[in-house]
Length: 296
Ligand code: MN
Image (cartoon, rainbow, N blue to C red):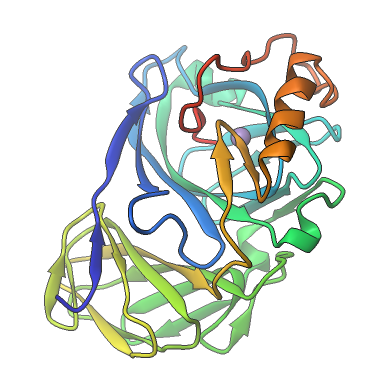
């Protein structure tokens, strides 16, 4: 096989709301700085129903949200209240600590409707792990695009295909959304040491081998590969340079030291991450270490 295959793990985040988790996995805990990769939906909410990820904390990472369909209302302890729509990107640097919630906007909840998207976590380099938290929203029109031979590329974060996203990042990385027409081909150059291809929808091959839908291919280093769409396909390309060492993950916390995780647990117990606007509830600290609860 020319690539290493990661199978999705289905996680029920409550109320039948499921995500497919690709990262972290074994042996690929990270691909470049990408330490967490959740594919949410496609789900269809009935009128009156919606997404409700209550306030919860993060440290040591940045969350990146990108939607294919629907909308999410993000609120955080910096005072941010921001709706995200398909093609936009939300980049939230948790750094030293932030709390946020993610819910369906009121109008969407009343009407019901689809939700489909991806949330990833980006590990921060050690020198930025404890940086001041911040939040960026970039509308889709602000992101560079490339159109070529049946392929539409949008550069979400970092640099690739000769274009650079305006989104802040802290280490060499790329994150690109590709929409491919049947028969379209795209070469993935070895511009970064660690690269992966995620097939969100459709059928495609990688150097002639089929990549199953909703699976991730981790590519071999220093080798150009060509993806070819057999149907219309929605593909995410991601990766970067290897991180500066391993990371601990506990719940929604990422850190290069266990002490930082312990401090974050005590801080959340003491409600020390600040108030999220318009919110009165929060997700309690779990008793046992478990994977992150959020699409989030
Ligand atoms: Mn979150």
